Length: 157
Image 1 (cartoon, rainbow, N blue to C red):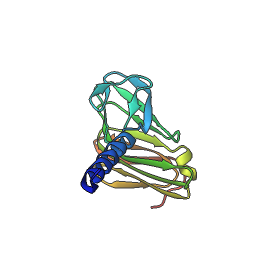
Image 2: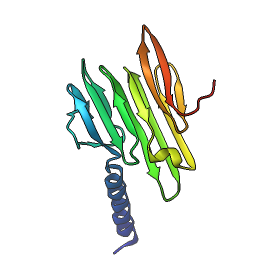
Image 3: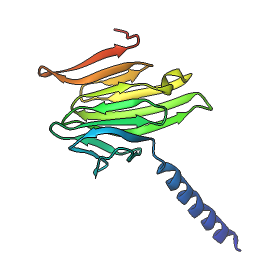
């Protein structure tokens, strides 16, 4: 087999392999109240959640996602959060999570990710970027303003 052909076979295999790895779910829907969607699909208990999925709820909707480390993200009504990045590697004691919350209220409760030595958890909101360090919190609109409430852990001002 000529060198160019071998290179093309290797390149195609690498792309296909990385696509399969990227499609591995990072969590599952653990609870929901309609209307709720994951990446445009109707929510269902046990439905996979992947990186880049937009999680949405409508009026009176709720959605809870349990990630592979047992962290939980709960969306209130009329919310939208995109799972931009979720990498959890217990063998290396590392985690990297980026969520983009563009609408509504949500709650984040860390799981095994809280015990990782190297962790970077960022939640971007329309008003601020929240750096999470082993904490449980709620964020969203309250009385016409946007707020964040620390539910567990230590916060800095």
